[in-house]
Length: 424
RNA sequence: GGAGGGGUGGCAGAGCGGUUGAAUGCACCGGUCUUGAAAACCGGAAGGCUCGAAAGGGUCUCGUGAGUUCGAAUCUCACCCCCUCCGCCA
Image 1: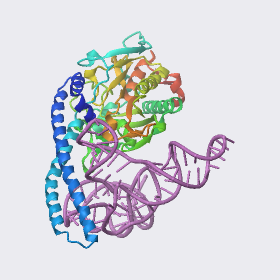
Image 2: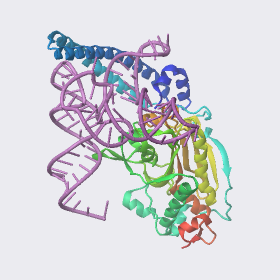
Image 3: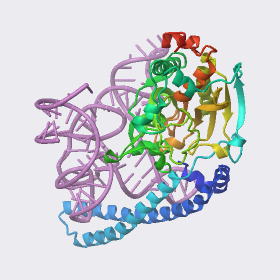
Image 4: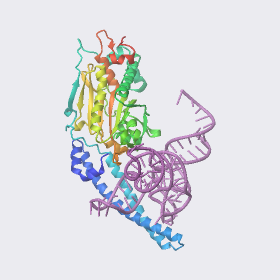
């Protein structure tokens, strides 16, 4: 959520920044300003009436204690109360309208974000390693998975329909090994605190991290309980401290969580549907940070580095992309994607998206910290995958496939996996 | 699922219709004292919105929402959450 004061004071700046995202959200600013002006007018009027009422009511109390008559005053106050009731209703409606408008306005891209219309304007920041060479055409993870019996997509479909995964045997073990490997890395070497949160969350949490109200059709919902299946651990973990005021000395808070992620992927049917690249349920290790305004951009850089470390230790080729304004997520001010090389798809696959939301989410969830000057400030929140598992799995088996049909397990992963290769 | 108890400031805990946005204690911040610290003493300190150039003022908030009343932390209703006991259960 943007600061209404900023919108009030610099509407042109806000409009211009939002316009760089594309879309027509900039148009909502005018409506918002109108509602805000009206709201303040009505509130001021209302408060004047309330002040009168309070003053007279106190007078009644004083007179009664002196056993004096108060009939006239009571009549007067009753009349004020009737006037106030109408204004109160209007003020509440305007306040509600204002909040709803604010919830649908995206964050402002950071000044350093390259301006562009869509993903074609994204910038490659750096590459690590190089594409592995194969004598023939490398098999993709679907073929490898079938041959080695580590992936059973047909039966997953039987259970849940298309877009679901079933790892089997060494495949299931490989996934579990990767989860443990990543969580150990982030907790032991990178200083994150492990969290194992609920996977079902209330609407407030989804609003807090800005999945709602705008993207409700993309979310799985338990109708009977008004609970949502978290599309990412970002939701429960970032909301851990919602409605709290943290001590500045406790920041940054750094969390890492393994959770399944549930996404309806409405409207993306037919896109990247091959294998396990885009699915309705997948596992992910997610990192979340809560920090201060002054530190959030350096925390973003170290967050990306923490995610990159996973791929470096596994020896997988990847590149880091800086998203342009048009490709930026709704709540993000700046985002880096990490894309791992998939020999089987002959393409880079997004395995991590690391974003700084600045105070956008914090305003929505009322997450603050008490600064050194004892002032309450909205925190800055960040998150990034560290990493998403199915795509990592695909890149790994495709990259380390051997001419004999086996898959070599990277050395760092062997203690977790319990063997140095997967064979038929 | 059944029965009962309860949600007040960072925490603990009073208040149960009228200058109470809220006693008191602890924790916190500043000061006095001290070589320094501790103790003691003095003082400060909730959040949001709004008016104002500022100083400062107003208003709302005692789980949430609605109601009764001239006036609600205090009374009524609904909902949410927590605790205890019973039942069921991984």
